[in-house]
Length: 276
Length: 276
Image 1 (cartoon, each protein chain N blue to C red):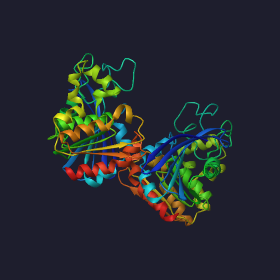
Image 2 (image 1 turned 180 degrees about the vertical axis):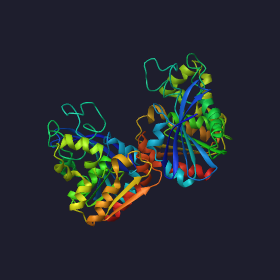
Image 3 (image 1 turned 90 degrees about the vertical axis):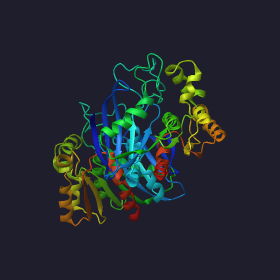
Image 4 (image 1 turned 135 degrees about the vertical axis):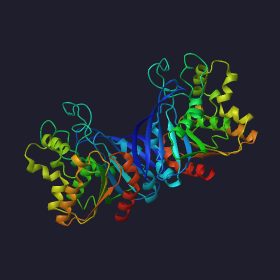
């Protein structure tokens, strides 16, 4: 474990760490914001979207101000394995491979050796926080994210509602099995048998195993990806059918960017803090 | 004038514009945040530091939230002329040429054709806002900035206290004539006659023409550039000697980054709004 940087922010510390991940068989970076004080603090895992690294959220979302006030630790991992030997999209596309791990465990070659982001987020990363002796109360953990990371947060919560107790999302890919981004990623990472895709599809999951915790979703109406890739109504319909509590808030005029996230991040942080 | 982007942020609009600058003889970009509502609003000019463009402040500082609340327009220009034919540091160094216009009017070849950032900020840019019919009350204008931009803000305020009525700075270069960054820039842009440098040196200016308005400076104690390049005590001593009202706040443990700016941006915006 190597600390790459440590910067004071709103009285607390914004750190970035690098470590050799056993799960992903590569070096990985992740960011941790720790408020001032002894804690232990509840912890929120932030999962970023396509093309992002551990940097985007910590530089653009403006979360540290509110995390400092509420006493929340926020962990922001990278979005895929990286480095020499990690395969990428053959054409270098932005929506698959590097920067596009989709928070699943790949089963197909050549992806299955490194692309195990589901295990990394749910097992290795929480254990790392314990090893690092961060002032975190791991029993009070929530998860949230953006776009591909909203997909990750919702699927991880639905599969682990006792470990990741609260869940919210900005502009999430709610039904990857039914949209181009998800079909491309899942057919490569998981193979052509679509019955195996449902285990990483929030809309499919919520239909058969709703959690008892409300899921909060904010979605901008001016988001260029809304109609083709995001389709939050698919999740809403499935959630309504299975009794999953949820709130889908359509935010008039907002797009898919971090300007949208920054506008509503305070709402989300307060919402998680009240529940953790 | 071309609008490059327009994104909703905290109810208002974060825009980026491009235009052919007559002053700089090149195309220039600048960012404008406009709160919701009819205004007219007071306007703050933000001047960024070395290596920055119009993007850094609007993505990293978290200013939109507070500007929306207070009703402030914030204009953030690029930090130098750009584009084909604009000369750069012969070795491509980060601290001179592109991204390092130092908010002055160069008098020496080959810089004097394009490097006229002082006239651009003080004349062309305010006139553009009028032409654009933005909801701005140009009689209520302030200026602030970071590092090289703090230098720009302080010198522009001291030379134009009736036009840029309020002034604050984060980690400013307060005495460019006395530090390596400034000596390199000034000797190239203004020539070797150091008597001509004082017109763009806040410490020299404040000794002979203090303004009546308090100048607010925040400086992190963990800033790597503090001892060699920034030296805020030089300005403080000169200001004390000439009767310039000022507040120099040394912020324990903070560095030179946007994490520092983000932590105290709300303070600065409220401080300007109270005075405009």
